[in-house]
Length: 308
Image 1 (cartoon, helix red, strand yellow):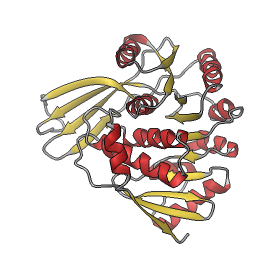
Image 2 (cartoon, one colour):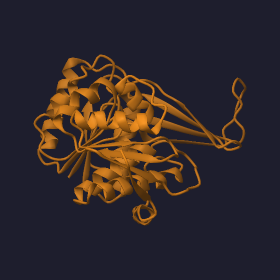
Image 3 (cartoon, rainbow, N blue to C red):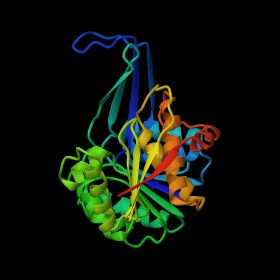
Image 4 (cartoon, rainbow, N blue to C red):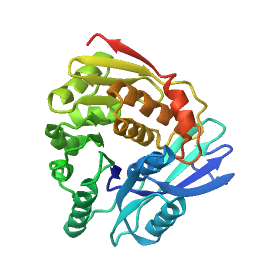
């Protein structure tokens, strides 16, 4: 069983506009609500890929109930940690005239020490039967950066991390199989701007030296980079028509975790992760993937081993 865990779920609103004008009254041509956020997107994508998976996340309020209802309807296995604060709402604005996407993000509310402890207890319970753990998303304000380290320190299965900053740095000594920040998040983690590919690879390999077995970096629609020890790879995603880019990184996490669970080699795992992200681009609602399309797309992801 793949365990998708995280502390930052979202009840997502997606609005489409023929021509969105900032500062004006805009009337949406369509509106949709769905479960989202890194942890939920990862779990939904895994379920779409027919993986044996389970989601662990806090939920609260009427928005949390809406998420639970959707998961029940889709029969996605989940362990919910009840919290008093309503699960946050984020809004995606899709401008059909320009193809641009604007994301309005509500930050996660702080979690009390008591509810963090409830989450940690639930994590240890679920992780006992996990074959792969995928932990993703930001930590609520006030959560100790060591929280992820403390969760994972007794885990023996492969770990995929989509986190950043101090919590990522704290978890590196545990030797996660994959870490997957984007280029901006990597820059935030190492504390310096990464202007060139050489600077990017150097920063990635610094995280390898500090414990990460594979560092995978996304940068929007551009190439995906991966480093392992002294090796560096550049992956080229297939061209796709973009409908909604939200959740692509989460689908990549899910694809990598699913392929890892299938005991595929790491380069192939990354190709499948990129294929899952590419498939997500064409969907209006995030992480609702077609597994056959993902498998076909994975064969079209080119990979080049670079001199590092």
